[in-house]
Structure formats: C-alpha cells, structure tokens
Image 1 (tube, rainbow, N blue to C red):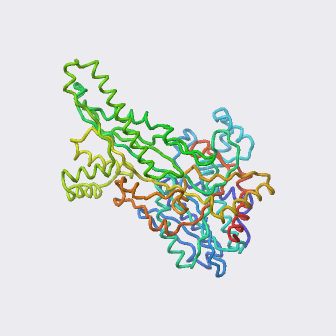
Image 2: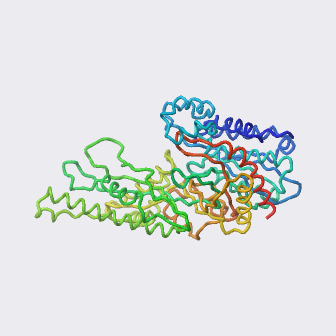
Image 3: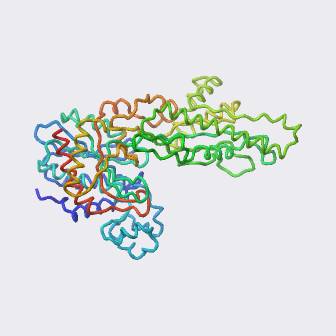
Length: 539
C-alpha cells in the first residue's frame, strides 16, 4: 500500500484537513470530525478487509468516539494511541476568527499583521516553518502523526497491534475518555488484546515563557475543581449591617485562594502552578436593592502526589482564614456606622463546612426522604451544565439550612483528573532512555523526561495513580456524582496501564497565536515515534 501520510507535506495537508473542522467542544463539528476520521480510515484496504476493526462508539449525550485497531497476526501485545479531536473556542482570535480553522490562509494573512503579533510569534512566523491556527498544536498534530503510524501498522511495520483511540470532550469534562474505558475493555476481550501501554500525542508544554527545551512525559498532572458556595444573609441596601453580602464573602475568598503558595507542590524538579479562579459570580438573577444572598467561585487546583484528603484540609483551612477576614472587615466597617452601645445587637458569624456536612444538616431538619426528593426534582428538571448544576444542588441545601448561615460550603465539580505517573515503570524507563538516545544521536535533540504533563490529559484515566487516595474523599463532596455524572472507578482500575506522552512541538496553546513547528513535528517526530513504538513492543 502506497503511503499517503508519510512526508512532511502529506502530514501538513492531513493536519489542515483536520483543523478545517471547527470541532469546538460541544459543537456539531466535534461529531463530524469523528465521522471524517471514519471516512479517511475506512477507505484504507486494511479496514475494507477488516471493517469490524473500525468502530464508532456513542456517548450518552449524542457525541461519539472512534477506535481503529490494526491487528498483526495472532499477536496480543497492543499499544493504544490516544488523541482528542476537540478544541477550545476562538473568541480570542478577534478579527481573524474566520481564518482560525484555515491554517495556511491564517498563516499567510498574519504576515500582513506582523506588528500586531507578540515578538516571539512574529519571529516564528517570519521563519516560514510554523503553522498558525486553532488546533494545530493542541492537538490535531498529534492525531495526524498517530494516523501516520496506524497507516504504517497496516503494512506490518510493528511487532504488535496498534489501537487508535480518538475522543471528544477532552477540553471540558473528558466524557469521551470516560466513555472509552468500557469500550476499550470490551475490545480487549473481543479481540484478545493485551494492552502494554498507552501513548498520548499531546504537544510539549513550556515550563516558562521563553523555555526552549524539548520534553517527553511519563505521566500527567492531577486536577480538582473545588467550588465554594458563599451563602450570606440578604438585606435591604438601606440596612447593610442587617445582613452579610455574599459578594463581600467571595471577594475575600478570592484573595485567600488566588495564586496561593499553600497549594504549590514540588516533586523532584517539578512544581505545580498555584490555584487560579475559573469562575466567580453571585447567583442573583435579577436587579433589586436586596443584596445577593449567594455567590460561587471555582478554582483550578493542580496536584501531583498530594491526596484528596490533604487538599480538602488545605481548602477548608483557607475557607476558615477567609471567615475571620470577612468578620474583621464587617465589624470594622460597622464601627464607623453604628454607635458602640448599639453594636451589641450585631451577632454575625460564618460557618465553614463541606457539602457532605451540609447534606447531613439538611437531613436532620427535613428527613432523608425529603432532601432526596428535592435533589431528584432538580435533577429531573436539569438544564444547566455540570458546574452550574453542581452549584444549584448545593444552593438548594443551603436554603434548607438558613439557620446555620452565613456559611462557606466546600464542594467539587467535574472535571476531575487523577495524577498519574509511569516514571518508575521498568518498561517505560527503558523506552524513554532509548527514545532520548535516538533523538539525540539522530537529530541532535535533547528530550527531557518530565514526569507530569502539565496541560492536563486523558492519560489521567488510564495510567497508574501517583498517590493512593480514596476517591470517596472527592466523590462525597461532589453533588453531581450519580446525578448525570459518573466516575467509573471500577473500569479505571481494570484498565490501568503504563503511559507515555511523546508529542509535537508548538507554542501558545489556547491562545490566538497557537502554532505548530513543522520540521520537528512532521519530520523528526514520526520517525522518533516509530522507533519508540518498536522499543515498547520489544520491552
């Protein structure tokens, strides 16, 4: 079979055809690109002869994922090639939005706007070896190279089986990967496969601006999304000290948590970025002179070897410090407005508790059946996304327990990414060393082994966890678990396998200057991965 996806030019054309699908998470094109992959692969002689090896699997929300198995004789050894097809939105492209999914045209047009580009992006553009556009780096270049490897496998190049897995929704909730787990388990038994490892194709992430190092990864960083419901006490603006404004509460929480050094974790030479807010707003839906009763904030918290219990302890400690700052502010301001002898009537306090504790308090007041009925009713009427629905479930419980308010309630919302690492796995160690030697000897490229991919990836659901941490410590504080969201812990444990990420070179993921370097990505990387896969099969 004549190779169609081998040369730099061919791979660039293939990448552009993938990027042409504006597969923003949740859009119809996220569905369409999977069907396009099915069309591309279905035209290959191998899949015409083995149509049962190319499958589309439905997600519960109507989206779909694709698996493509190239099986060599009676060999059981199988390596999974993992990619995601979705991308983030393009609002940041401004006047270039209409070209965001047309890499060649965008790259050409940007030459007319060099002064509008950041200096580094302009220099890369002028070199002529970078392709700009949404998804070029994250991560359709990785998918492009994986398709090339699958094509090579059809010619019997490798000593084992390759299973391409292309999933949607990596950029939001990873529902694609969570759905893929039982599908992989079923394929394993049906085709008698032995999964040796999963290789991801996420691009290299720079550790700091200007970082010129090349990386491969033997794991993926963990992420939790803790939310805090600040439930205050409403009042008329004419009587401000008769209540406690939820917006005041949430503002002090932001000062306590945003970029907090308490959550920075260092393992060896690697360090997690500090927390940063991804959502903050009050929950008042209409304008009035009543103060907002509730507000919510959610924080991106990354971790490596910490347990969920340790994170919970830090989060609750931060909430407790916030409580005291709120009360100091409130009492200080009251002293300027209310006479000293009248302040004795002010009795303001803030309760800090978890979602689980709040649920128990609601049950004490109304009984288990009534609380469950209310939560089920909200679930049946749900029309919100996961984050907003999680917040609604907590807010409803808080409304049942007004007597213990004002309160700060800790809860979790999807997505959750377990921290995983294969750095100590002997097969991965041998493979990494061979890959590094090959890159240096063949291309003069020094690949650094970074234990944790910091960009977040679906490897989190299939690799060995970095620290033993009972998932109940998370799920007991996750209102949405069992109400439209399920973390399939049993399948995650069943399919656990070594992981490695060797991907293309690019810059500025999730920015309008996202771009891919073509020489390394489409000349060096395909050969490097070919060599690495054979090492994995023979280890």
